[in-house]
Amino acid sequence: MLTGRGSLCEPASSRFCWREYLPGYDVALCPVTRDRRTGQAFFERVEAGALQAYTSVLTFDELAYRLILALVAERYGGLPLDVLREQEVTVLREIVPPVRTALEQLTRLPNLHVVEVVADDLFVMTESMERCQLRPRDALHYAVMVRLGCLNIASRDAHFDRIPAVTRYVP
Image (spheres, rainbow, N blue to C red):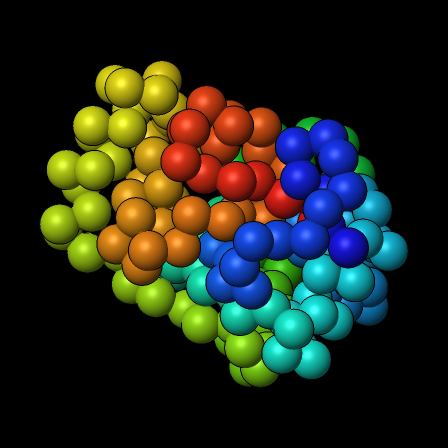
């Protein structure tokens, strides 16, 4: 079951927009998840068809970046951004292949629909930045949600609670 704004509840709809930095979709591919059990349960429900999940390509950009930083920290120690800046080509040559594999595997998850960000999303993005005091990336995720008509979101990001029309569930 997903946790919705602090209480256990079943979603009003089985359509979800998904936005997570470190999903628990596969413990072997993503060993740095904060809570493997609940993340895993969410993706199992998506895979089984109990939920239809929608995400934008922006989520994959965020996920790739977080995975790169986590793998750099794991393999090199130190501060990941410093290591990446100092040895960018060497580090990326080593780190990108497993990140690419993980992202490709995620795109093949049944019932996960990856959608584009389009130019028309920019108006809703800037409007929601001002009206709901959202950061640009969160506002862009919201703009895609509005375009899809999908106002349920699976995310640990409490910033989405500022949008009255959105119901956030914590996977």
